[in-house]
Image (cartoon, rainbow over all chains, first blue to last red; front, side, top):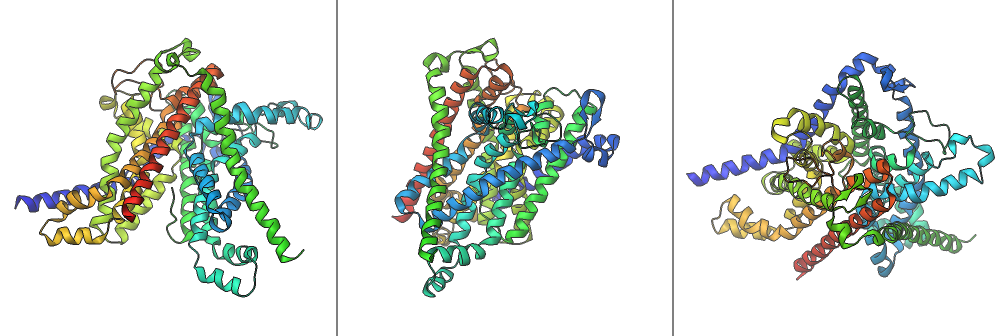
Length: 298
Length: 280
């Protein structure tokens, strides 16, 4: 009898543990919505999303520059990370000899393990000075002086492009390896070269999974905070060029939340969080819909 | 251009891309270690920071990291492993598992700064009587929420890899389900589960954004989990961005990177041993 009770009790406890992820997601949504809602009410949803001015001291809250900033930085990151990541994934799945594989695979894992503040420090002390030198010498005449500091869309995009490499490589390689061997054999049997097989058979067949990989990488880039803060310059103004300083949605929260008193300012930051949360949920759903099946993630 | 030449060109580019990936890692690690290791000494590791971190060592942030990592995993591991057990042993795929998996995927996708906002509102403000506001405990609660997806996924996978015969044998001997799970399946899956726990340690050690809003960032040596503290990652950020002491930032970064690399190597070693054992 006691054993039966214990048996039932343990099952209920495990069931509750399994629910925890759902519970936390609901709690996160509820809490940031409750805290952020007054800001939407005060400023008006459209004014908040499309307003060009962010002046917390005057009580003016418009996050349009940060939305554009997040998109710009993410676009550069994808332009850098997708070709490099995809090519590395194809290399690992198709042509890497075992010795090269033993070198590349741990490298990808280590890239995934480096903390984002370390990427930030690297970007801040290595990439930013290089971009600054470039902006001051090469492009000096054509650039506005305020765009010559090196802290820029370009710096943030480059750092993020490196940071999303592991996501793209791991998922894309899994997807490529999961393609039925018959596709490849059929193509090779018809006399196609290995490269023709990769480009004309494997990649098209793997496309949904690869798109899912890119979308997930996009989600990571939108959500990254520390590395971006350290290299982006963080001015809450619409970025004009690759060399403009830029502030993203994530940096807006991390920069001001530690100093914001309770009230309008912190509510506006929570509202920024709501937008960010909504954005990542949409991206995540898109990835799910694209892949139509669970994609394994590290 | 013939097909052979096209292939040669394409493969050269693929080799180039893979080499570039390895080169990027080498440059980042090499740069951080070359800049940082000269700052690292016995004093650096064992002295407390002075002048806001401009001089002295990083002892308090090392202690803060240890407290924080231990507290996070004590909170997260039982829940994560429990959820993994339920998914692998107690249920079949259906609407409930789809819901749970969606929750796990969604949780894994939430940006860490959003976890920070949530942790601030719930653990720092609403649960202040329990957590004492900004404290190691508030940070640990927040980080525990963040690593749950990793823990659940790795434990579920590890449990599913245990051969079905183990369970059948145990049940045939008259053991209950719970006895089977605890005495037979869990021990067999232990190395895999441990790998997930260590992977989570790596994630928690490097976490920064969420902790900025929950951990308090105090420079003082923490005496309990109810006090504010800073981890090495937070120390690195604050010293680089707000104090501008780059030599100290590099020193901290070197220690942080070596810690993460150590954790990573441990994971690889454990995984390899586990695979060897399964093959035998």
